[in-house]
Image (cartoon, rainbow, N blue to C red; front, top):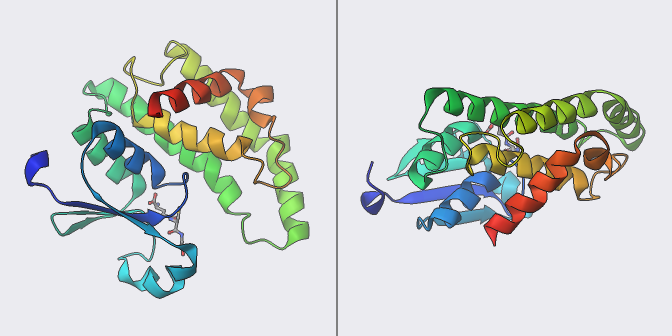
Length: 200
Ligand SMILES: N[C@@H](CCC(=O)N[C@@H](CS)C(=O)NCC(=O)O)C(=O)O
């Protein structure tokens, strides 16, 4: 697939996080032109049925549809030079991306809970499952040298983890203390600041 002949359209919600933002960041970092369809949340009920699984992100490549954020991340990561060429490093990149999704999904499951249940479930998550994922990811980062998650350079894995640490430190998640990252994964906080600087 040559970049010059490829028309790309990425559809995702209009906020700097979640499952679609790493793909947007990768395309922007590599200077690859694409149609950046940022769906206003208010429009979602109207446009949802236009997507094959009624979910986003969705990537169109010369009119062909690709679903699933990490399939999109792998394809665009390869096009952008942000996916490891070495098989083992690529597998580590996949491991980290999927783990970021598993950790974030715990919180996504609470988004539409009634307030009392949300508080109870999030308090339980903060007491066990989230620190477990964070300390595991912290160890993963240190095992690969502490700067990047794999291949000794910026990859899609770093962009995925940035979405997790951005979200957890944002203060937008009631009942989740923003210090959860510094308390359980101090190196992930340093990683966040380091990766944010590479994006500007
Ligand atoms: N496994 C899918 C999950 C996609 C997904 O859950 N997308 C969410 C946004 S992050 C969505 O479209 N939510 C709106 C809805 O389900 O109505 C992926 O990784 O792309």
